[in-house]
Image (cartoon, rainbow, N blue to C red; front, side, top):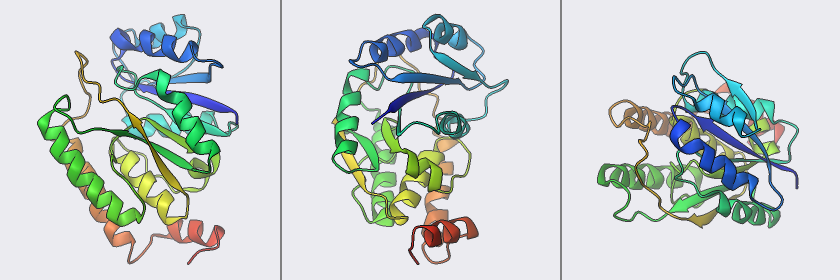
Length: 236
């Protein structure tokens, strides 16, 4: 399997270098792409100094846009592992995702324990959204908002994707499951330190809730893009 690591980054200069060093220390190291989502700090410069490929947006567009651009740039790889730039996703866990994919999974989700290290509001929102996504997908989804994931090429190539912010990750996992892709989970640490999350409770949580509602309605009346994708995969 030929994997690449995709790191969407926004205002991540303080932590990105350590993340990239951790990825480069793996044996063998994956090819790495950093998508700088319009950062105003030295995020892009840190990535370039680390010797990795960098794709920069002129302004902030949202995590979903960054991931979509990364998938398009990495379309020749067998699989893409996504992890955040703020240090919450230990690069040393990446081989766990590869092993799960080699065992047959198409989309591998990192599963964090909802410990006291995770802020209380995030624990509540994560529990609610994960239960809803699990019900919609019909497959196990314990942590629907974890950005540490492995996507086989067919998943991001064949799953209809709506660009956006953090709701992107909810949509793609539910739609991929509905298309028959096999999901799996691996345990990853729950890491919260001095880094500042870019997720806004007031802005992004309602967007995730709205996406889950839309996906619920899609189960009754799939949009044209999903109907075409289902037909292409031989499903109704």
